[in-house]
Image (tube, rainbow, N blue to C red):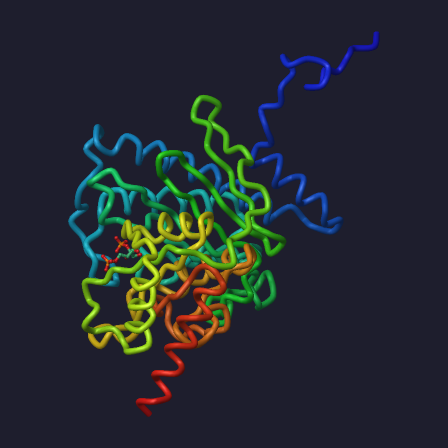
Length: 344
Ligand code: FDP
């Protein structure tokens, strides 16, 4: 018996619900005939952990999981309960899948060696970014970077597997827990965004092939420490004000970055005289977003150097970050260079 397959053009009742994250990952894997499927599985594991963390963040006000955990992490920052929960969820998902040999997490002082020498991948992750916004119900995020190990599979992991420059990333992404929850990722072939549909428990493709505007009118920076900024940055900010750009700063990197990626803008967390390396972490914050930015036609520098070219020297290394629309990053970079040259 032949069964009719209904398409949306046959009947409105056959409307398409959309492409799920899992199906999209599978479709993309099929584009690479020799892909083993391990990276795809790893991305699906991250998608599952994101759903669980999304559930926890939504319950935070009710379930006594907002507030401080009572510890400080390696950066000397007070850990929130949700930081700890998110770290547990993501490290579990990454451990159980079997594709990963080591994890670098903001919440753990040392590299987590999973003693899984057959795992091909190293993951660097900030399980819950923007912690100071948890208690006040403002958007927070997760950021992840995936690298292929450089030493042979089957051997113990080595420092060079971990200390790779960002340009070696094979995939990177973020989850934004906001007015709706989104997962955005790249495997180096463009950037795609998925929105979580809670009633179906699935991420659906909502932002295919994301492209950042070349230029923008939004600047995002904590100007409270303006007096400690270098002259080139101050000059840039004065220009932004003269041009009456919009100042937008939530204080959650993922949320500020995401908005600027869609609308055009720049996010800056600079070096200051008090913190000469800035605040953000290279391995599990700046690198992932820089990779996504470049894949979407935007760019990221530390003021001078391309973020993806920085050779890391320590696990929790900090870096200044200028990231967003390509023309804006170019302009601030040029001013910084000009003013630095005058002071040498
Ligand atoms: P948080 O410390 O709340 O986790 O990643 C660090 C970060 O947030 C970014 O998400 C955010 O953009 C920045 O720090 C906020 O720092 P300031 O409070 O210094 O502006």
